[in-house]
Image (cartoon, rainbow, N blue to C red; front, top):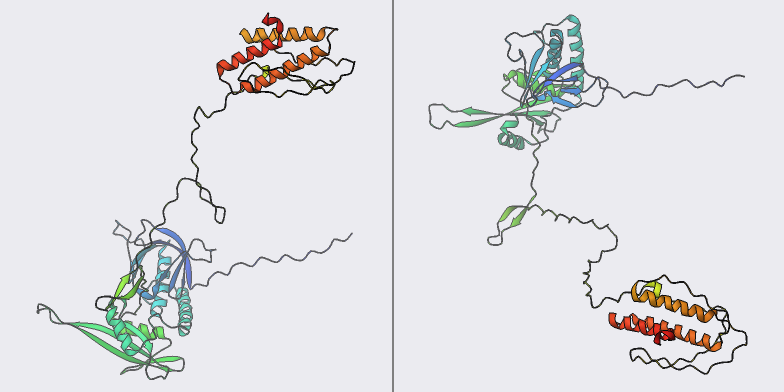
Amino acid sequence: MALALRPPRVPKPKSSLPSHYHESFLEKKGPRDRDYKKFWAGLQGLTLYFYNSYRDSQYMEKLDLGVFVKLTDEAPWGSSHDPGTHFCLVLRNQEIKFKVESLESREMWKGFILTVVELRVPSNLTLLPGHLYMMAEALAKEEARRALEMPSCFLKVSRLEAQLLLERHPECGNLLLRPSGDGAGGVSVSTLQTLNGPLTRPCPRRTPVVRHYKVKCEGPKYVIDVEEPFSCTSLDAVVNYFVSHSNKKLMPFLLDDDYEKVIGYVEADKENGESVWVTASAPSAPSAPGPGPAPLRGGPKQLPPSSIAPVSSQDKLPPLLNQDENYVIPTGDAPAANYVNQDVPSPSRPVVPKPRKLAMFQAKPPKPPIVPKSEPKKGLNGGLARKLAVSSAQAFSSPTTGLADVTAELKGKLQRRLALEHAAECTGDQRANLQVWCISQADPSSQN
């Protein structure tokens, strides 16, 4: 049986790694670092990127070489001999130290950094012809990249605005590129330097000197309009020309993005009508919730807890009687009959209305009722209960018991039940007397 052909496996697309002019391992130590940290570093344009691994496409840190100052060879701390594996990159705002694996790696990194910064291949480094050729290729790529982008010191401002920016922010640089005022598509260069008066005076005079230069755009090249015109391939080359021919006294203007930390607004003074800047007060923090559970949003509101008043001993219900002293009146198959109750001598008992006359009964005597056995009680109540059980058994066991005896027995049980129900409302002494009276009414022999 022929097997079905499987489609060939297609490799999963890998994330494209960035293209660098030069890349290798570098150990970096910044101003706030205590020790060197190893990265996989790559140089692209005027930016130095740092990765955790050579497989990563997302960088962890980066350095802008647009504020480059110089490169120096530095011996390790505490040693006067340079092993050729340390160098220092000095920028305008910080100084970073690097450590590499060999002298050749250090010279390679220095050569590529100087190539992209100065737009020329350095000639004072210990490099092989192959290394010089790689740097020339990186130089051509960098020139092509810069021809398509504007330098960071290019701002779309007027002549007067450029002068004000240079005067108010001298710490950001003193060279600025702006669009030309003639509308021909050219570029102008504005610079600001300060002349100090003689130091012999107590208060030397400082005089700002502002200069503006015109750069013409002739095809793909930019020509600096000076006594001896100079042609550049990009605007970055124009900036580098001014920096190099001023002995690095002119630095590109990089305006820092300054953001406010407090919200404010303009408000008119009520007294004189003058507008003043008012800082908005910070909102007060919400009160902390209590230790109890937080109510659910959108749910029913919880009612406040109601106070429970303690119940006094007088309002409490009297305790129930013992369940063993309750009796069941059997109905069984006994015929329905009305009974005549005698008058109750005790004034505390409720008055029971007299029933109608005794109805006619059948000649057949009823079945004796089933009386539950009661457990013997201790003391007086136990003895009386035993006597009651014996007398009731003797009364029902006699074969000559007539209808009158049954009527008397049921009447006595009815009286006892009413007396027990009423005893729940009586106090202790009345309850005991009432129970004795009920037992004496049920057992005539005890009265004798």
